[in-house]
Structures are given as structure tokens and as C-alpha cells.
Image (cartoon, rainbow, N blue to C red; front, side):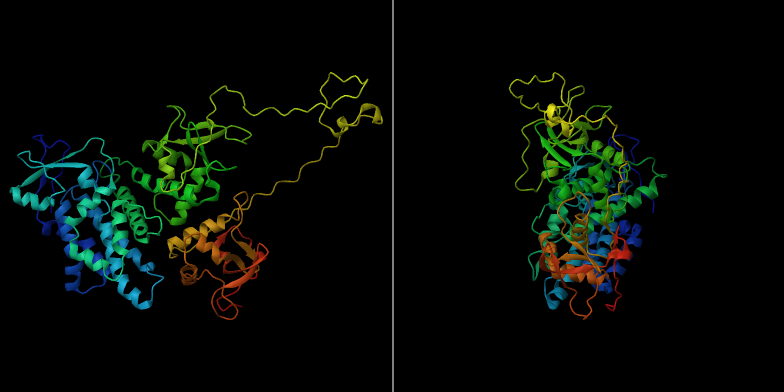
Length: 554
């Protein structure tokens, strides 16, 4: 099937526009990915056509042959349809490694798990549907404009008896994911929402939160995490596959949302990102909000690598360019993207990046951090504001003439001169300092199948053992890495769910009795119940110092 290409000028006589194809013709062009979705759902033919294919047909009728972007990923005709199908497939596939209703009984899970899978596919299918309402203008040959709020594009073309339609892109369109909520009724009928809500009050809110980018701070939205990870994978694959065929796509432009999300997660839970604290990465002054760079970039990279996001840049320079282009950061000038700042207690000027708005980082943090009562930026040529260190002269005794030469900092200068015995001046022997030991760097190396929420929590706990990070939230024991169960609760996880997820991927050290994988250890001089993680999953530990047990607990 040949699909006509489009132009950005719908009124040009050279613009062939898009053919008003039927839904069946569009689905026929995507038969390969639809077959993979059917195989992943593992339904019989009738159930698949009623529950899944009906949704795909409604989505195809709504977006028709619209591209996802003008000149970037999925920019070919039919790109938005293909993007939704591929993201829906990978999101659905990701549900196989997750337990959504971990706190519920087995019978409740058996009831809810199919609904969670269905909702996750819908969220992936409609993850970028908001672009129809915010980025494009569709007209027919008579110049009539289609409204995506009123009806699907396919229905509008049939009503207008249109053979072709034309597309133009809104100038400087802003990505507004919340608009996807208004497009959703054209894709998902009320009966499906009713089915998803049976026996629970969580699935539909999580579905809406994912499609509309609505934060739910009390819950960990596994569904949205699966969709965002799948979308990043799909976009990265498309850019890589089509770089030669479609010119020079804007690589990395889709990563903005993931980088900003990582910044917010670090500000909300990382010990080194507590605003305006000593040795913090984050400084908020009267002249704006700053992140120490490239240290902050290194934290972002480690966090996203632990999440296994594809296509994430490893170089701080690349990350800086992406966030500057997305107007998340603000450059000092054309030649200097970073800013020199001098936070309180800093001994020297530090390099930092400036966020365009503090709300970018502090969204969802209540109460929001307050700015210091000072400016942080050090203009060029301004002297160091910290006072120089000088020796304080001792008070003189009656009748004693004080020296006009500043005293030295040696200990002998603190005693009267006439009480010091005369000693020959011998140059002090210079001792070479011992070689500095490289700081310990511990990082989590968990299997890919580990629940992402547990991975995040355990990554943060392991990080506290590194030098200069903060109070340790775990400790080393003879058999591995001891984590108190209370630390999982502090990270917002149920200990039983965390233990089950870790046990499923074989990360826990078994007990000698073969019972529950819990141990009692003295943690901070207090008997504490916790679990022991196998040290082989933590990079940086010297395994020679451990008594490793096998799967049988020996």
C-alpha cells in the first residue's frame, strides 16, 4: 500500500495531502505489530477482537494517518498510529514481570491482573494522543478545519465525503499531555472504563494519571513507569532505524521528559540533593536555582541507568545541551552555558547550571524549599566574599614592646619570647603524606527483572554507603548487605512486597533454616529486623571479605 506524503502548507497546489483511507486499510499496513499484540495477550480470536482489536480500530479512526512529529521520530504518514501500537505492545509485554496488586489476596489478584494488563496497553496506545489536539491543524480540500475534540478524523472525513485531507503544524506548539484526557473518550468507550473499575478504585485513576501526566504522590504508578520506558525504547529504535532514510532527526529531543523526571526524583529523595545543605548539589538563592555540574549530571545518569532507559546520554555535556535546548536550563551567555556560584561554606567558586524556573525541580515537594537571603552567582572579577584567615595578636604585658611583624602560626608564637629557650634553626623534616585511598563507590547491579520500585529503593539505600553521602541506611555483615525492613517502608514500599520481589530474582541470602528471608542484626547498636542482599549484586564490594552462601543456605 502506498501512502501519500504531506507538506506543512495545506494550501499549496503541490501538496498531495493524505489519502482518506479506511480503518481496515490502515490496520492492514500494521498487521505485523497487531499480530504481536495478539500473541502477547494470549487470547482466543473472539476475545481479542472484542476487547483489544476494537480499541485499536477506534484509535486508528481517531488519529488516521497523522504523523507523530513534523521532522523527528515517527514523522512519516501513519506515524502516530504506529507509535501508539508499538508503545502499547511493549507496555503490555512489560506487565509480565510485574505484580500490580501485591498487597491483595490471590483471588483478588486473579481478578485484577487482567484489568491492569488491559489498562497498561490502553495507556501505551494513547500515550501521545494529546498531539492531535495541540500540534496539528487538519483541513479538507474546501478549507474546513477538523476539530479533534468533537469526533475522530475518520468519521469527519466520511461525513465530509473527503477524498484527501491536508496537514499543517502549529507554530511553537507546547507539549500538553493533559489534553490526552479529552481525546480518550473517542478511543476508550465507557463500557471499558466500567470493566477496568470493577472490584477496585485504583486502575482507572492510574490510567488517567498516565495519559494526562497527572501526579499521584501517594502511590507508585507502575503502569505509567512501564509506558514511559516503552515509549523511550520505541522512539530510540525509530530514530536509529530511520536516520538515513529521513534526513537528520533531532536525536535526544524526546529525552527531555525523562531527564526532568530524574531531576525531580533526585530532589525528592536523594540525600545529596537536599536544597541548601552543606555539600548539596542543589542551591537556591535570590538569583535563582542552581545545580552543581557535572556532579548532578552524574547522579542523573546513574539513576536512569539503574532504570535501564534506552538512549540516555552518558556525557554531561550532551545532557546539558539537551536541557538547554528544551529551555529547562538557562545559559549564562552564548559562550558560557554554566554559572560560577559561591554557596555558603564553599571554599572556592563552583560550576553550576541554572534552572529557568524553580518549579521545574520542586514540583510536588511540599513545602517547597525557601531561597537563601543572598545571591549565589559570583560575577567575574569579584573578590572572594569569605574573610581571609589571619592570626589574632595576643594582648601585650605591661612594659612589653610588641613586635611590628605579624606572628607566625607556629605553636611557639603563643608563648612569651623571653620564656622560650634559644634553639638552633633546623629546617623541619618533610614527611610525605600516605597515598590517598580511592573513595569507595558502591552501585546496585540488579537483574533486569527486578521490580523498578524495589530497584529505585535499593539503589538509594546502597548509595548511602558511599563516602560523603550521608547516614548509612544499611550495613555490611558477614554474609552480605543487611537492609532493615524499615528502610523499605521509608522508601514507600511494603517490606513483604520488597522481599518477594528480591527473592523472585534470587538477590537475597537464604537463611540456614530455610524460613522467611529475614535476619536480626545490630544496626546502629539496636537489634533490627531486616534482610541480607547477596553482595554479588552490588558492584564495589570486595567479595573476598564475605562468607558467601549458596542457594541452600550453606
